[in-house]
Image (cartoon, rainbow, N blue to C red; front, side, top):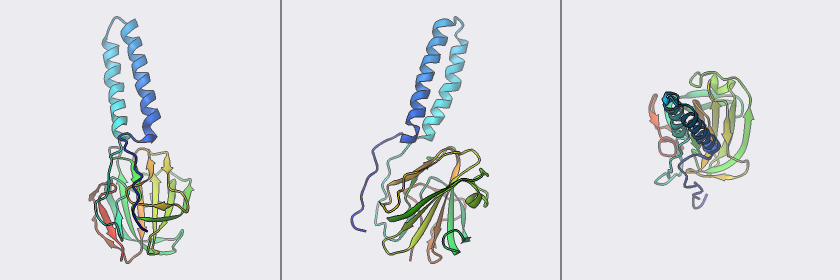
Length: 229
């Protein structure tokens, strides 16, 4: 694949949250000013600031975007595509593309996790497909196939195929995918973003060796979840 390319922008707030956070700050300032100026009793002002200020800070935390680089050789490594917790490590039937069994590793993201998604492997994007669907709770097994999701198929430099599936949850209603068909992709690059609680599944060849266990926390672009052979 040659020398890895670092395209990650040096940002602390994810671009998906820029408009929401800016509008929220403007609204907070305008309403706060009106309450302070035109109402003698200052209780409504302080109550508004306390409630909506807290909501804005929670949103700020949700849209944070840490700057991360994976240290070391990435050959044959599968790196966690998201922050969260391992909820599935098992052999599973994948009947949409492979029509055989695959090693499935799933990461559940709570609303408190970073929600940026990273490419888990160096390679080339074969295709990107989006599917409408339901909004079951993301940790349920049926969520992988029945929920709204986006599939990204990546071919590694040695010809192995890795499927990454971004899945919407009961609250998450927007999946953003930056991956483009026929483009090369690298660990350290952003694959996409999922708003609110959600999940990312990775389907690997059965010959891959899992490096994580159930309920283990993961850090996107840092935790090695599997090794290809």
